[in-house]
Length: 92
Image (cartoon, rainbow, N blue to C red; front, side, top):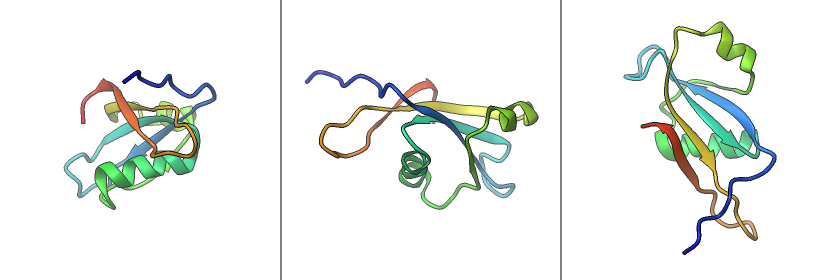
């Protein structure tokens, strides 16, 4: 099976974890077509056990002490199929 290329117009989103979570002080960088698909990734990977989602590089610059757990990138889907992501940096 041939891998589908990444989506051309993707946005960077950052999802964090609250202070009581084992990943407190960490974030996941999500490269996806929309805020909605980035949220779908976090719900699938972590359920409701995460805190907030932002899509601003300015936020990231203001939280330099946070540790990046992973970077994930959405794959292109054909015909509204299942949204899939690949880990492209770090590891969850």
